[in-house]
Length: 293
Image 1 (tube, rainbow, N blue to C red):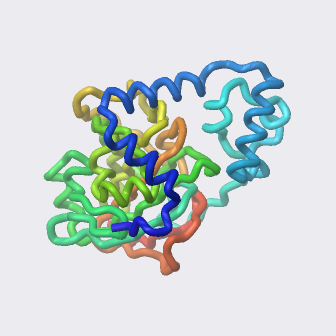
Image 2 (tube, one colour):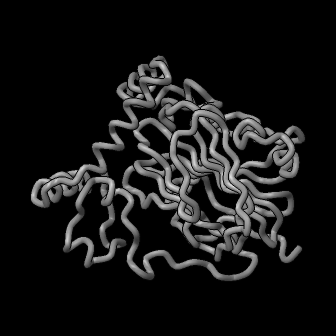
C-alpha cells in the first residue's frame, strides 16, 4: 500500500472527497468535464488556455505535428487527444519485443500469483475482478501485469503492444475515482472498482489483455477499431468477428483526459530489466516475448 506520508495534502483531501461522493455525482461531474472539454472555443482563447496547460504540466509539443500546432485546436479535448507527428515514437520492431502500449510511468511489473491476483505497491486486486472474467483470468496465472500511469502531460492514445488479433473487447461499469497515489493509498483495489475497457488480444506470445482504466475527470474512453458507447450501465462483451487485426503500435483506444493502463501477459513473457518506477514512451520495449507459439 502506498504510504500516505509524502503525498500532498491537497491530493489526499481531493481523493477523500471524491471517494465519499455518490457514484452518480462523480459520473455527472466527469461527464460535465468531458462535455466542456469538447466545446469549441474561439482560437485566441483556446490558444491562451492550452498554452497555460502546456506550461503548468510541461507538455512536450515537439512530439506534435507542427502543422496542427500552427493551426491550433478547436477544443481542449482535441488538444488532449492530439496525435503525434510521424516518427515521434520509434517502435521496436524485433519480433520478440513487446512494447509499451502508452506513454507514462511504469509503477509496477509484477507476477500474477496462483490465484491470478496482483500484489503490488499501491494496489491489490484479483485479475478476474479487473477484467470481469474468471475463466480468462486463469490463463494468466504465473504471467505478468504491468501498470502504467498516464500523467496529464502525456500522450493519451493507447496502442497494441505487439502484432495481434483483437477477438473481444469488454466494457466494465464502475466508479470514476482518481488513480493518483492519494487515491491508491485510500483504496488499494480501485483499479478493479473504476470503469474499464478491456481489449483481449491473441498474439504469438499467448493471450494478452490491455486494460484502460477510467478515472475522475475522464469524460469517456474511445475504442479505435469499433464504435462503442461510453459509460455502460452493465458489463458488455463485444465479439469482434472477424477479429480486428493489429500491427504492433496500431491504435487500440483513446483516453479523453487521463488515467492508467494495465498490460497483462501469459506465463513465459519476461520483463526487460529496469529500475521502477520508470518513465516510458509508447513503442519502447518493456517485455520480452517467448517467440512463436
